[in-house]
Image 1 (cartoon, rainbow, N blue to C red):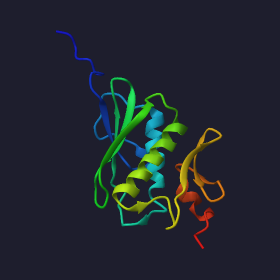
Image 2 (image 1 turned 90 degrees about the vertical axis):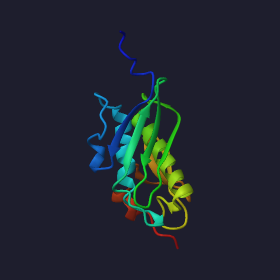
Image 3 (image 1 turned 135 degrees about the vertical axis):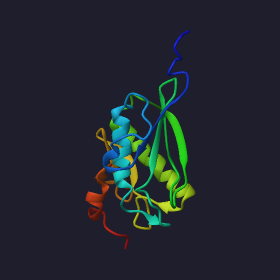
Image 4 (image 1 turned 180 degrees about the horizontal axis):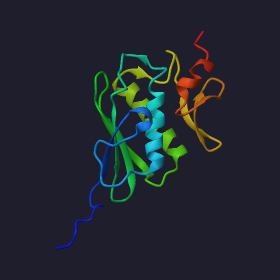
Length: 166
């Protein structure tokens, strides 16, 4: 009897948002692609600051990272206190480099929080910072002046560099 093809369905890992996303709740016998783990960890760190709106506990989120048989990635998380669940994939592959993965994950999370949980992130209550790639690096941009505020993953360290709205 032939062995089942592990790529005949999506491979899914569950990853808690604990200090750089270390450890997996559901292991598939091998680790998911490192750039994607780093991207989820970076955005998870940034979720801890500059949230405006409804109270949302992001420290207990568990990411879902899935790779389908065509090597495309989907991400999401399980809902927790104050946050709804979501899952999405948009044509990025498991070979996507960290910078592109981090900017995409940040944008997806930002859209999800605003659209379903009425949380503006990252924001001080007026406009949002935007996740972008600049010189090959994933960064948060202040759209009013097109100024880099922080690398994605280091937002809490640089939040004081972004002045509050007048």
